[in-house]
Image 1 (cartoon, rainbow, N blue to C red):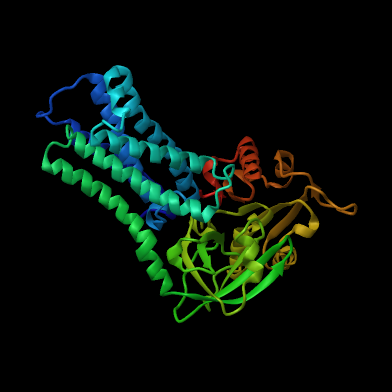
Image 2 (image 1 turned 90 degrees about the horizontal axis):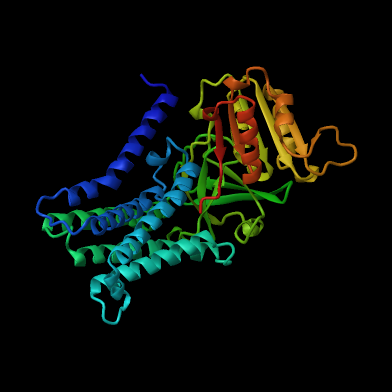
Length: 444
Protein backbone atom coordinates (compact mmCIF):
# COMPACT_ATOMS: atom_id res chain seq x y z
CA UNK A 1 0.00 0.00 0.00
CA UNK A 2 1.45 3.36 -1.07
CA UNK A 3 1.65 6.35 1.24
CA UNK A 4 0.02 9.54 -0.04
CA UNK A 5 3.42 10.92 -1.06
CA UNK A 6 4.37 7.73 -2.92
CA UNK A 7 0.99 7.68 -4.63
CA UNK A 8 1.48 11.20 -5.98
CA UNK A 9 4.98 10.27 -7.15
CA UNK A 10 3.75 7.34 -9.22
CA UNK A 11 0.88 9.40 -10.57
CA UNK A 12 3.41 11.98 -11.71
CA UNK A 13 5.54 9.30 -13.40
CA UNK A 14 2.43 7.98 -15.15
CA UNK A 15 1.34 11.36 -16.52
CA UNK A 16 4.85 12.26 -17.67
CA UNK A 17 5.00 8.95 -19.55
CA UNK A 18 1.59 9.61 -21.11
CA UNK A 19 2.73 13.06 -22.23
CA UNK A 20 5.87 11.68 -23.86
CA UNK A 21 3.87 8.90 -25.53
CA UNK A 22 1.25 11.28 -26.96
CA UNK A 23 3.96 13.62 -28.21
CA UNK A 24 6.06 10.99 -29.97
CA UNK A 25 3.49 8.38 -31.05
CA UNK A 26 2.35 10.29 -34.17
CA UNK A 27 5.99 10.46 -35.34
CA UNK A 28 6.44 6.72 -35.07
CA UNK A 29 3.15 5.98 -36.81
CA UNK A 30 3.78 8.43 -39.65
CA UNK A 31 7.49 8.01 -40.31
CA UNK A 32 7.92 4.27 -39.84
CA UNK A 33 6.06 3.46 -43.04
CA UNK A 34 7.85 1.39 -45.68
CA UNK A 35 5.60 2.76 -48.42
CA UNK A 36 6.95 6.30 -48.04
CA UNK A 37 9.55 7.49 -50.52
CA UNK A 38 12.57 9.25 -49.02
CA UNK A 39 12.71 12.97 -49.89
CA UNK A 40 16.06 13.81 -48.38
CA UNK A 41 17.22 14.05 -44.78
CA UNK A 42 16.66 17.77 -44.20
CA UNK A 43 13.20 17.79 -45.75
CA UNK A 44 12.04 14.82 -43.67
CA UNK A 45 13.75 16.18 -40.56
CA UNK A 46 11.96 19.51 -40.89
CA UNK A 47 8.67 17.66 -41.28
CA UNK A 48 9.40 15.68 -38.10
CA UNK A 49 9.94 18.91 -36.17
CA UNK A 50 6.66 20.27 -37.50
CA UNK A 51 4.75 17.14 -36.46
CA UNK A 52 6.31 17.19 -32.98
CA UNK A 53 5.49 20.89 -32.53
CA UNK A 54 1.90 20.38 -33.66
CA UNK A 55 1.44 17.44 -31.27
CA UNK A 56 2.79 19.54 -28.38
CA UNK A 57 0.41 22.37 -29.20
CA UNK A 58 -2.53 19.97 -29.16
CA UNK A 59 -1.48 18.79 -25.72
CA UNK A 60 -1.57 22.37 -24.46
CA UNK A 61 -5.34 22.01 -24.16
CA UNK A 62 -4.77 19.29 -21.58
CA UNK A 63 -2.32 21.39 -19.58
CA UNK A 64 -4.73 24.33 -19.33
CA UNK A 65 -7.87 22.23 -18.97
CA UNK A 66 -8.10 22.41 -15.15
CA UNK A 67 -8.18 18.62 -15.01
CA UNK A 68 -7.53 18.01 -11.33
CA UNK A 69 -6.64 14.34 -11.91
CA UNK A 70 -3.77 15.40 -14.17
CA UNK A 71 -2.61 18.32 -12.04
CA UNK A 72 -2.90 16.70 -8.61
CA UNK A 73 0.61 15.11 -8.56
CA UNK A 74 2.31 18.33 -9.65
CA UNK A 75 0.30 21.31 -8.46
CA UNK A 76 -1.43 23.89 -10.65
CA UNK A 77 1.40 26.43 -10.63
CA UNK A 78 3.95 23.84 -11.84
CA UNK A 79 1.64 22.65 -14.63
CA UNK A 80 1.01 26.20 -15.82
CA UNK A 81 4.73 26.94 -15.67
CA UNK A 82 5.37 23.85 -17.79
CA UNK A 83 2.64 25.01 -20.17
CA UNK A 84 4.43 28.32 -20.69
CA UNK A 85 7.85 26.77 -21.14
CA UNK A 86 6.81 23.89 -23.40
CA UNK A 87 4.78 26.28 -25.56
CA UNK A 88 8.03 28.03 -26.44
CA UNK A 89 9.61 24.70 -27.35
CA UNK A 90 6.61 23.88 -29.57
CA UNK A 91 6.82 27.33 -31.17
CA UNK A 92 10.48 26.93 -32.12
CA UNK A 93 9.89 23.41 -33.43
CA UNK A 94 7.11 24.66 -35.69
CA UNK A 95 9.15 27.68 -36.79
CA UNK A 96 12.17 25.47 -37.55
CA UNK A 97 10.08 23.44 -40.00
CA UNK A 98 9.85 26.15 -42.74
CA UNK A 99 13.26 27.69 -41.91
CA UNK A 100 15.07 24.39 -42.55
CA UNK A 101 13.12 23.96 -45.78
CA UNK A 102 14.05 27.48 -46.96
CA UNK A 103 17.73 26.93 -46.18
CA UNK A 104 18.04 23.41 -47.58
CA UNK A 105 15.77 24.04 -50.58
CA UNK A 106 15.81 27.77 -51.48
CA UNK A 107 13.20 27.24 -54.21
CA UNK A 108 10.58 26.73 -51.49
CA UNK A 109 10.81 30.45 -50.69
CA UNK A 110 8.45 30.93 -53.61
CA UNK A 111 5.67 29.44 -51.45
CA UNK A 112 5.62 32.72 -49.52
CA UNK A 113 4.01 34.39 -52.53
CA UNK A 114 0.51 33.68 -51.29
CA UNK A 115 -1.16 35.05 -54.41
CA UNK A 116 0.29 32.19 -56.46
CA UNK A 117 1.12 29.64 -53.77
CA UNK A 118 -0.92 26.43 -53.42
CA UNK A 119 -3.41 26.16 -50.59
CA UNK A 120 -1.11 23.97 -48.52
CA UNK A 121 1.31 26.92 -48.29
CA UNK A 122 -1.46 29.40 -47.51
CA UNK A 123 -2.67 27.20 -44.64
CA UNK A 124 0.89 26.89 -43.31
CA UNK A 125 1.54 30.64 -43.41
CA UNK A 126 -1.81 31.40 -41.76
CA UNK A 127 -1.12 28.92 -38.97
CA UNK A 128 2.37 30.30 -38.37
CA UNK A 129 1.29 33.96 -38.40
CA UNK A 130 -1.48 33.29 -35.90
CA UNK A 131 0.97 31.35 -33.73
CA UNK A 132 3.45 34.24 -33.73
CA UNK A 133 0.68 36.67 -32.74
CA UNK A 134 -0.45 34.31 -29.99
CA UNK A 135 3.05 33.89 -28.56
CA UNK A 136 3.88 37.61 -28.70
CA UNK A 137 0.56 38.69 -27.15
CA UNK A 138 1.11 36.19 -24.31
CA UNK A 139 4.73 37.03 -23.65
CA UNK A 140 4.22 40.80 -23.65
CA UNK A 141 0.57 41.01 -22.55
CA UNK A 142 1.26 43.46 -19.72
CA UNK A 143 3.59 45.65 -21.79
CA UNK A 144 0.99 45.74 -24.57
CA UNK A 145 -1.65 46.58 -21.92
CA UNK A 146 -3.98 43.86 -23.12
CA UNK A 147 -7.03 43.44 -20.89
CA UNK A 148 -6.81 40.02 -19.23
CA UNK A 149 -10.27 38.62 -19.98
CA UNK A 150 -10.19 39.69 -23.64
CA UNK A 151 -6.67 38.33 -24.08
CA UNK A 152 -7.67 35.04 -22.47
CA UNK A 153 -10.63 34.61 -24.87
CA UNK A 154 -8.60 35.34 -27.99
CA UNK A 155 -5.73 33.21 -26.73
CA UNK A 156 -8.05 30.17 -26.88
CA UNK A 157 -9.45 31.16 -30.27
CA UNK A 158 -5.98 31.53 -31.74
CA UNK A 159 -4.88 28.19 -30.28
CA UNK A 160 -7.73 26.43 -32.11
CA UNK A 161 -6.93 28.35 -35.32
CA UNK A 162 -3.24 27.37 -35.19
CA UNK A 163 -4.08 23.68 -34.93
CA UNK A 164 -6.91 23.86 -37.48
CA UNK A 165 -4.80 25.49 -40.20
CA UNK A 166 -1.77 23.40 -39.28
CA UNK A 167 -3.75 20.22 -39.82
CA UNK A 168 -5.16 21.51 -43.13
CA UNK A 169 -1.59 22.19 -44.25
CA UNK A 170 -0.52 18.68 -43.25
CA UNK A 171 -3.43 17.03 -45.05
CA UNK A 172 -2.97 19.09 -48.23
CA UNK A 173 0.75 18.23 -48.36
CA UNK A 174 -0.33 14.62 -48.07
CA UNK A 175 3.09 12.95 -48.03
CA UNK A 176 2.95 11.67 -44.46
CA UNK A 177 -0.83 11.35 -44.37
CA UNK A 178 -1.22 9.60 -47.70
CA UNK A 179 -3.45 6.88 -46.32
CA UNK A 180 -6.96 7.23 -44.86
CA UNK A 181 -5.99 5.75 -41.49
CA UNK A 182 -3.29 8.40 -41.06
CA UNK A 183 -5.72 11.19 -41.84
CA UNK A 184 -8.22 9.74 -39.39
CA UNK A 185 -5.42 9.51 -36.79
CA UNK A 186 -4.52 13.19 -36.99
CA UNK A 187 -8.06 14.47 -37.32
CA UNK A 188 -9.04 12.40 -34.28
CA UNK A 189 -5.93 13.59 -32.48
CA UNK A 190 -6.81 17.23 -33.01
CA UNK A 191 -10.51 16.77 -32.37
CA UNK A 192 -9.75 15.06 -29.06
CA UNK A 193 -7.71 17.98 -27.76
CA UNK A 194 -10.06 20.65 -29.06
CA UNK A 195 -12.95 18.78 -27.42
CA UNK A 196 -11.25 19.51 -24.09
CA UNK A 197 -11.61 23.20 -24.86
CA UNK A 198 -15.30 22.61 -25.58
CA UNK A 199 -15.59 20.85 -22.23
CA UNK A 200 -13.94 23.76 -20.41
CA UNK A 201 -15.82 26.51 -22.25
CA UNK A 202 -19.28 24.91 -22.58
CA UNK A 203 -19.90 21.77 -20.55
CA UNK A 204 -18.08 22.77 -17.36
CA UNK A 205 -19.66 26.26 -17.23
CA UNK A 206 -23.06 24.62 -17.66
CA UNK A 207 -22.35 22.33 -14.70
CA UNK A 208 -21.10 25.33 -12.70
CA UNK A 209 -24.24 27.28 -13.56
CA UNK A 210 -26.32 24.58 -11.91
CA UNK A 211 -24.45 24.97 -8.59
CA UNK A 212 -24.61 28.69 -7.77
CA UNK A 213 -23.42 30.35 -4.58
CA UNK A 214 -24.84 33.33 -2.74
CA UNK A 215 -22.82 36.14 -1.20
CA UNK A 216 -23.36 36.21 2.57
CA UNK A 217 -21.15 39.18 3.46
CA UNK A 218 -18.28 41.36 2.32
CA UNK A 219 -15.99 42.43 5.17
CA UNK A 220 -13.02 44.83 5.02
CA UNK A 221 -9.68 43.47 6.24
CA UNK A 222 -6.32 45.05 6.99
CA UNK A 223 -4.03 45.55 4.02
CA UNK A 224 -6.66 46.78 1.52
CA UNK A 225 -8.29 43.35 1.39
CA UNK A 226 -11.90 42.17 1.54
CA UNK A 227 -13.26 38.89 2.85
CA UNK A 228 -16.03 37.48 0.70
CA UNK A 229 -18.23 34.84 2.34
CA UNK A 230 -20.31 32.54 0.14
CA UNK A 231 -22.83 29.82 0.86
CA UNK A 232 -24.15 27.19 -1.54
CA UNK A 233 -27.61 27.81 -2.95
CA UNK A 234 -29.74 24.63 -3.16
CA UNK A 235 -26.81 22.21 -3.16
CA UNK A 236 -24.39 20.75 -0.64
CA UNK A 237 -21.39 22.86 -1.66
CA UNK A 238 -17.89 21.65 -2.45
CA UNK A 239 -15.29 19.82 -0.42
CA UNK A 240 -11.76 21.12 -0.40
CA UNK A 241 -8.48 20.62 1.39
CA UNK A 242 -7.07 23.57 3.36
CA UNK A 243 -4.73 25.57 1.14
CA UNK A 244 -6.53 24.87 -2.14
CA UNK A 245 -8.12 27.50 -4.40
CA UNK A 246 -11.07 27.92 -6.74
CA UNK A 247 -11.86 30.00 -9.81
CA UNK A 248 -14.43 32.63 -8.83
CA UNK A 249 -16.97 34.25 -11.16
CA UNK A 250 -18.81 37.41 -10.10
CA UNK A 251 -21.01 39.79 -12.08
CA UNK A 252 -20.94 37.47 -15.10
CA UNK A 253 -22.09 34.04 -16.31
CA UNK A 254 -19.53 31.18 -16.18
CA UNK A 255 -19.80 30.87 -19.98
CA UNK A 256 -17.89 34.13 -20.46
CA UNK A 257 -14.74 32.67 -18.83
CA UNK A 258 -14.20 35.75 -16.69
CA UNK A 259 -13.28 33.83 -13.57
CA UNK A 260 -10.24 34.44 -11.38
CA UNK A 261 -8.30 32.14 -9.01
CA UNK A 262 -8.39 32.78 -5.25
CA UNK A 263 -7.37 30.68 -2.26
CA UNK A 264 -9.87 29.69 0.38
CA UNK A 265 -8.97 31.80 3.39
CA UNK A 266 -10.73 29.68 5.99
CA UNK A 267 -10.90 25.99 6.72
CA UNK A 268 -13.72 23.72 5.53
CA UNK A 269 -17.02 24.53 7.27
CA UNK A 270 -19.68 21.84 7.91
CA UNK A 271 -22.34 24.26 6.64
CA UNK A 272 -20.62 24.52 3.27
CA UNK A 273 -19.91 28.23 3.75
CA UNK A 274 -16.69 29.45 2.13
CA UNK A 275 -14.43 32.46 2.60
CA UNK A 276 -12.14 34.17 0.11
CA UNK A 277 -9.98 37.13 1.10
CA UNK A 278 -9.00 39.28 -1.87
CA UNK A 279 -6.59 42.21 -1.97
CA UNK A 280 -7.24 45.18 -4.25
CA UNK A 281 -4.58 44.75 -6.92
CA UNK A 282 -6.35 45.25 -10.24
CA UNK A 283 -9.58 45.90 -12.12
CA UNK A 284 -11.44 42.81 -10.93
CA UNK A 285 -10.13 42.76 -7.35
CA UNK A 286 -11.03 46.43 -7.04
CA UNK A 287 -14.72 45.57 -7.52
CA UNK A 288 -14.97 43.12 -4.56
CA UNK A 289 -15.96 45.88 -2.12
CA UNK A 290 -18.95 46.64 -4.38
CA UNK A 291 -20.38 43.12 -4.10
CA UNK A 292 -23.71 43.02 -2.29
CA UNK A 293 -25.10 40.26 -0.02
CA UNK A 294 -27.47 38.03 -1.94
CA UNK A 295 -25.54 38.39 -5.21
CA UNK A 296 -24.91 35.18 -7.15
CA UNK A 297 -21.42 33.76 -7.55
CA UNK A 298 -20.02 30.69 -9.29
CA UNK A 299 -17.05 28.50 -8.40
CA UNK A 300 -14.90 26.09 -10.38
CA UNK A 301 -12.91 24.03 -7.92
CA UNK A 302 -11.32 23.02 -5.77
CA UNK A 303 -7.91 23.08 -7.44
CA UNK A 304 -4.31 22.92 -6.33
CA UNK A 305 -2.07 20.63 -4.30
CA UNK A 306 -0.80 23.29 -1.87
CA UNK A 307 -2.14 21.67 1.27
CA UNK A 308 -1.02 20.12 4.55
CA UNK A 309 -3.32 17.20 3.74
CA UNK A 310 -0.82 16.04 1.13
CA UNK A 311 1.84 15.66 3.81
CA UNK A 312 -0.03 14.29 6.84
CA UNK A 313 3.03 12.50 8.30
CA UNK A 314 5.15 15.67 8.67
CA UNK A 315 6.37 16.23 12.25
CA UNK A 316 5.67 19.95 11.85
CA UNK A 317 5.06 22.70 9.32
CA UNK A 318 6.61 26.04 8.42
CA UNK A 319 4.38 28.64 6.74
CA UNK A 320 6.09 31.58 5.00
CA UNK A 321 3.86 34.21 3.41
CA UNK A 322 4.20 37.63 1.88
CA UNK A 323 1.25 40.03 1.90
CA UNK A 324 -2.01 38.46 0.74
CA UNK A 325 -0.14 35.16 0.34
CA UNK A 326 -1.29 34.57 3.91
CA UNK A 327 -4.74 33.42 2.70
CA UNK A 328 -3.95 29.71 2.08
CA UNK A 329 -1.86 29.70 5.29
CA UNK A 330 -4.89 30.99 7.20
CA UNK A 331 -6.98 28.14 5.81
CA UNK A 332 -4.40 25.55 6.89
CA UNK A 333 -3.77 27.06 10.33
CA UNK A 334 -7.47 27.32 11.08
CA UNK A 335 -7.97 23.71 10.02
CA UNK A 336 -5.12 22.54 12.24
CA UNK A 337 -6.71 24.42 15.15
CA UNK A 338 -10.11 22.85 14.47
CA UNK A 339 -8.44 19.43 14.45
CA UNK A 340 -6.71 20.22 17.76
CA UNK A 341 -3.38 19.43 16.09
CA UNK A 342 -0.47 20.19 18.43
CA UNK A 343 2.47 19.63 16.10
CA UNK A 344 5.02 22.50 16.18
CA UNK A 345 4.25 25.25 13.68
CA UNK A 346 6.31 28.26 12.61
CA UNK A 347 4.65 31.06 10.65
CA UNK A 348 6.71 33.89 9.15
CA UNK A 349 4.72 36.74 7.61
CA UNK A 350 6.32 39.48 5.51
CA UNK A 351 4.53 42.79 4.98
CA UNK A 352 5.46 46.32 4.06
CA UNK A 353 3.87 47.99 7.11
CA UNK A 354 2.16 46.87 10.29
CA UNK A 355 -1.17 48.30 9.14
CA UNK A 356 -1.03 46.00 6.12
CA UNK A 357 -0.88 42.70 8.05
CA UNK A 358 -4.02 40.87 6.93
CA UNK A 359 -5.56 38.60 9.61
CA UNK A 360 -3.24 40.00 12.34
CA UNK A 361 -5.77 39.62 15.17
CA UNK A 362 -7.18 36.38 13.82
CA UNK A 363 -3.71 34.82 13.67
CA UNK A 364 -2.91 35.96 17.19
CA UNK A 365 -6.18 34.40 18.30
CA UNK A 366 -5.03 31.04 16.95
CA UNK A 367 -1.81 31.02 18.98
CA UNK A 368 -3.42 29.68 22.21
CA UNK A 369 -5.10 26.87 20.23
CA UNK A 370 -1.94 25.75 18.43
CA UNK A 371 1.69 25.00 19.12
CA UNK A 372 2.40 28.05 17.00
CA UNK A 373 5.33 30.45 16.80
CA UNK A 374 4.18 33.54 14.90
CA UNK A 375 6.74 36.08 13.64
CA UNK A 376 6.20 39.23 11.58
CA UNK A 377 8.81 40.80 9.30
CA UNK A 378 8.15 44.41 8.23
CA UNK A 379 9.87 46.26 5.44
CA UNK A 380 8.99 49.60 7.04
CA UNK A 381 8.49 49.00 10.77
CA UNK A 382 7.20 51.70 13.15
CA UNK A 383 9.52 53.27 15.70
CA UNK A 384 8.38 51.06 18.58
CA UNK A 385 8.57 47.82 16.55
CA UNK A 386 10.23 44.96 18.43
CA UNK A 387 9.94 42.32 15.72
CA UNK A 388 12.00 41.57 12.63
CA UNK A 389 12.51 44.17 9.94
CA UNK A 390 13.59 44.11 6.31
CA UNK A 391 12.91 40.99 4.27
CA UNK A 392 12.73 37.30 5.06
CA UNK A 393 16.27 36.13 4.36
CA UNK A 394 18.63 33.35 5.32
CA UNK A 395 19.62 35.02 8.61
CA UNK A 396 16.01 35.34 9.76
CA UNK A 397 15.20 31.78 8.72
CA UNK A 398 18.25 30.43 10.52
CA UNK A 399 17.24 32.34 13.63
CA UNK A 400 13.81 30.72 13.91
CA UNK A 401 13.99 27.35 12.20
CA UNK A 402 14.28 24.44 14.66
CA UNK A 403 17.11 21.93 14.71
CA UNK A 404 15.01 19.33 12.85
CA UNK A 405 14.46 21.74 9.94
CA UNK A 406 15.22 19.01 7.38
CA UNK A 407 12.23 16.97 8.57
CA UNK A 408 9.61 19.72 8.30
CA UNK A 409 7.42 20.62 5.34
CA UNK A 410 7.53 24.24 4.13
CA UNK A 411 4.70 26.19 2.48
CA UNK A 412 5.56 29.45 0.71
CA UNK A 413 3.14 31.90 -0.92
CA UNK A 414 3.60 35.55 -1.83
CA UNK A 415 5.21 37.82 -4.43
CA UNK A 416 7.45 35.85 -6.83
CA UNK A 417 10.72 37.65 -5.85
CA UNK A 418 10.11 36.87 -2.18
CA UNK A 419 9.28 33.24 -2.94
CA UNK A 420 12.39 32.80 -5.08
CA UNK A 421 14.62 34.31 -2.38
CA UNK A 422 13.11 32.18 0.40
CA UNK A 423 13.42 28.98 -1.66
CA UNK A 424 17.11 29.66 -2.31
CA UNK A 425 17.73 30.44 1.36
CA UNK A 426 16.03 27.23 2.50
CA UNK A 427 18.09 25.15 0.09
CA UNK A 428 21.28 26.75 1.42
CA UNK A 429 20.16 25.84 4.94
CA UNK A 430 19.97 22.19 3.96
CA UNK A 431 16.22 21.81 3.38
CA UNK A 432 15.50 19.27 0.64
CA UNK A 433 13.65 20.75 -2.33
CA UNK A 434 11.00 18.04 -2.02
CA UNK A 435 10.03 19.54 1.35
CA UNK A 436 9.40 23.00 -0.14
CA UNK A 437 5.89 23.62 -1.50
CA UNK A 438 4.87 26.81 -3.27
CA UNK A 439 1.71 28.42 -4.61
CA UNK A 440 1.96 30.96 -7.41
CA UNK A 441 -1.09 32.58 -8.96
CA UNK A 442 0.71 33.89 -12.03
CA UNK A 443 -1.22 31.35 -14.12
CA UNK A 444 -1.09 33.14 -17.46
